[in-house]
Amino acid sequence: MEEVIRSITDPEMLSQIERVVPFHGYLSTGVFVGIQIYNIARRSLGFSEGDRLFVTCETLSCMPDALQVLGGCTIGNKGLKIEDHGKMAATISRRAPKGAATAKGVRIVLDPAKTASYPRLHSWYMNAGLVSHEEAISDLIRAEDGVYTWEMVDVKVPEKPVKRIAVCRECGESFVLRGDEGLCRGCAERSSKNIQIDLTGG
Ligand SMILES: [Zn+2]
Image (cartoon, rainbow, N blue to C red; front, side):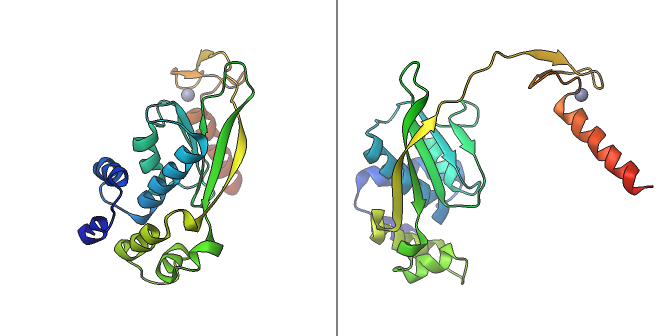
């Protein structure tokens, strides 16, 4: 992998790799895709490092880690949302202007019609053969933006309901209400499972 990384001449990307690898554990192809997606978003939206960003990742694997480190979008600061469609795609947006209902964003996808020109990368993408991360990432380095498709999108700003807390009548623990439910989500799940077990048990 060191040889592959040595072929990268962009000092910015080298510094990004240096920051992402300790967080994720190693340089995987999915992490590298995340780095490239972040850089396309930065150019399309014109944000600077440190600006508040929001990301929706359409996969749980690898890619979110690059966006957490580079974009500062984490699960805890609500900058990162996962909608696991099993896709190598992400939507990145900036903070909306005050009072606006939508924010300017961009959805970027690793496009199979374009990876087809890079047989090793394509084979990795389609899980059609044994391809090492070194081979797939070498193709991504050569392809640069050429294997991605992106479009500008309006991202709806989520409403911020007032937080209401209740104490669960089953377990006695406090939880954040979604409606007027009396059971916390944990107990509600357990009781619905019990009902299923009762039904199958006759
Ligand atoms: Zn409970």
